[in-house]
Image (cartoon, rainbow, N blue to C red; front, top):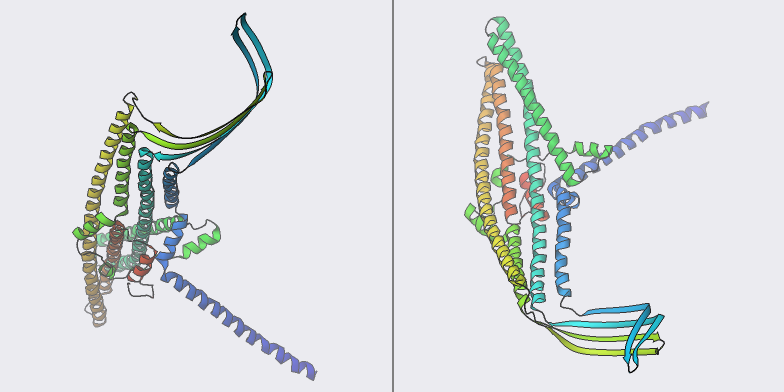
Length: 482
């Protein structure tokens, strides 16, 4: 008995220790998960952009188009390199022949006799103006393909920033609408009490009920916008469709836009004119179209070269053998080295037609470049003014928020002093919620306009998104823009 009494407390004593160890391990795992999630959030835009580069179908299509476009340069180079070809033929033949002799025609037939022939030819271009123009065109087309891919990267980054801006604004609108529903319900209850006490009207009660419905409708619309933004984010970043991944994605929240985001966004230029001037030089779409214009001009050269002669150096060796009755074991071995010159004389006017067609296409591409430049200038001007208007709107909303905080503080103090009512505080709270919602919308407009301005210079990349995120997201731990 003493032995069992001594062992029982020892066994019981291990349980609290094990519980404490398990709790410590759980806490450690939770802390590690929190740290990892915070590190991931610190580079949210960079991570999303990397995923979108791998999974977005539009960008994958642009990659395939680039890969196809750069092959034109290899094809053009191949035309100026040595060309080698060989031929081997083995056949069974039947031949009927007639020859004139002194005594008349002589007919002979050779049936089912074998013949073998083989040849090897090597050719090197010496003078081919069309091939040289084709090489220059291939270089322009390859550069065009690369620049189109760069433009697709900018478009992808802009779409990603637009999704995050809409998601953040919708999230703030949802929180504001949900809080507004509660406040409107409380206001309706207060008005109902006043009506019962004879100090209010039926109209005030019905209007309050209608405002509750309006707030609920706004909350429902904001919830739909949040889910739509989340779905667009999932599709762009290639989130898998299994239940576990959907649960993880549903836990991901929108960026929390800083109150001073619109003012803190870094601007590379101080006016729309400077942005337009820089974009004319750096915009990937305009650069691609300039390469397209160069390609069209080389097409004119290719068409004009059809009037010029061409010269090739060639070497050939051939072997043939047959076994007819009168040529048993006959063999021929031939070696050739020479220069071949081709001179076009007349093609029925087709060459002149191709020249006119190529010149017309070059004029079309040139005018498309001018039109694209005009559209870019107009878009930059719109984005610049949108950014400036969003900045002014954000400033006004921040001032309204500060003023409403003073009003709410005064209402709370007045409620204690008996000179104000709960309704006064609730009305000010509704205005504060609306001001916060409008501030988020203004910052979202500013963010999207800024991203379009940066994309016009080809300036949206993994590094720039990482650097600008602390300016955008209030949840980020980093605080400076390099």
